[in-house]
Amino acid sequence: QHTERLLFLSVEKPSNFTFEPGQFVRLGVNGSPGEEHLMRPYSIASAPCENQLDFYIAIVAEGELSKQFLDKKVGDTLYLDSQTYGLMDPQRLLPGKELLCIGTGTGVSAFLSIVKSNPWTRFENITVIHCCRHSQDLSVTEKFLQASQAIGKQEQFRFISDVTQPRQEDKMV
Image 1: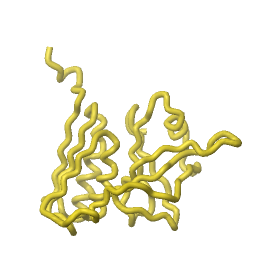
Image 2: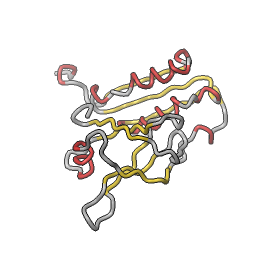
Image 3: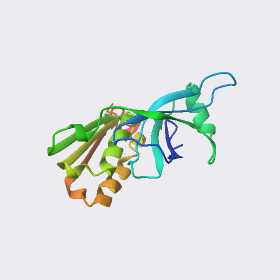
Image 4: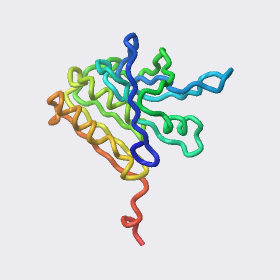
C-alpha cells in the first residue's frame, strides 16, 4: 500500500501471457465457494519484456476487491485473466514528432507501460501529463523519469503533473 488511496501491486507474469503496451487486463481474487472470481480491469504498468506485471490501483474505501488486495501477502494467488483489452497502442498511430499522453489518477499507468517500451522508435518527443486529486497521489513521477533514463531519452521526455485539491496550507483564505 503506497498511500491510504493507492496500492502498487506486482504479480509474477505467467510464461504464456502477452500484451501490448497500453493494454489492460482483469485482475482479481477467487470468489466465495460456488461464486465466480471477483475481478476488475486494471491497466498494466509494465513493459511486455518484464517478468512481472505491475498495477497502480486506486483503493476504494468500501470496495470489496480493494480490501482483499490489501490483505494479500507475497506468495498469495490472484486471478489474472488471459485476455487483454484496449486499443491504446502507439503502434496504431502514424509516427510523428510528438506523442502526448494525458491521464488522471491511476489511469496514467498505461502510459508507463508505453514509456518503458521505447516509443521513441516512432516519436521524437514524449510528454505525459498526469493530474490527480492530491500531491501524494503523484507517486509514479519517478517511475516515468527512470524509464526514460533507462532508454537514454530523458532529454526527449517531459512529465507534467498537477493536482485538483491543493493542500490545506496552499488554499487561499
